Image 1 (cartoon, rainbow, N blue to C red):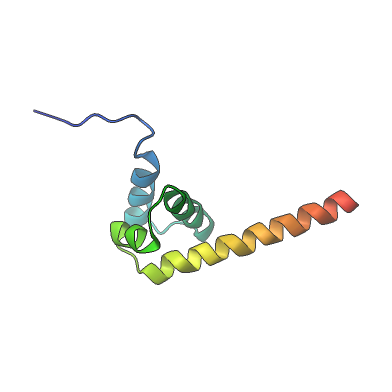
Image 2: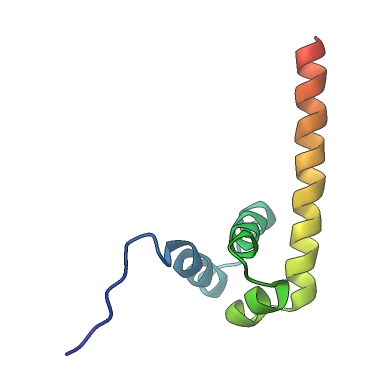
Length: 83
């Protein structure tokens, strides 16, 4: 039986996201990290949404959440550094 071979990491993120989306809803932090990684690889929000059967608006909301988290972490680090 023929099978396609790919590197172990080539589709690992996508496969993990697909499995977790189907089995159990992912935590928003986990999903925005995965969505961001795919978008950083050149996928559009619409492509990511279509691939995983979610609304494009959900992908966009997760990306906005990612921005808020990044700003919050930066603010916290600055406050800690200032003592």
